[in-house]
Image (cartoon, rainbow, N blue to C red; front, side, top):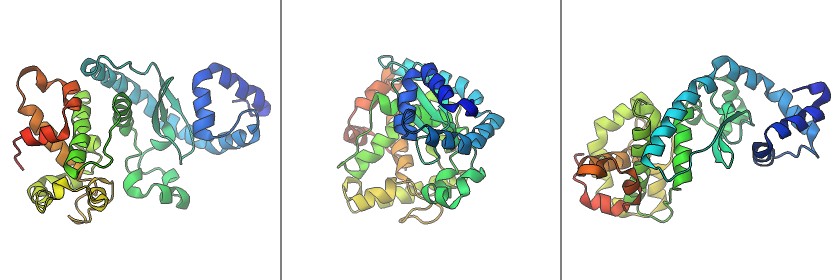
Length: 291
């Protein structure tokens, strides 16, 4: 932008992106171009180094073709869904959206994909908002995964409020299974958001984890303390120790759904619309588990 003629340059930007500019200024920057151009200019100057950093790593160029391929697969499984028309890359405040579906397309905030080692994530303020176990996922490969997660949630928002632990795990597991089908070459660690050591520890201890969850009626609990401890992202798990991540329930739910899908006959093996529609308890009652 022309910082010497900033307001005119800002007006041209809005004309160039008439739909997304409303989302960008109202929802992301939360600043009015007409009333607060000086604050927008200050943001521009403060975040220009972040924009330059994203240009060096070329995250958007690498992600675009992968997103397009993943969306083609998603359309194959969910043909009724109208795919986003555009991929919009932007730079926003570190504290705000990194990936969101808008009326204009999928908007991807590259400020949250600079790489886990980026110094931008280690200031006292930002590290308070995004502790290291969160910011380690602020890397370019997560752009595609996060985009598909949000497209899937746009197609059918997940609803877990008030549901039993087993229902919540399976609903989350459905989405993990769908991600895997749309991103068949993506590693399990990226799809699940675990470190390699966390995933290894879960697989080594999945029998004990399942025994704990399936005892004392825990699977059918609606206790928010239990569901939070099993489903909320955290660096370690309150029940299973430092090697197991907080949201271990994501893996358990995925394993249940994956087993159920493998046990289906014929077309239903690839019918992901049917998978989403099938009640979680129906899946649980029908599946033969091998924990």
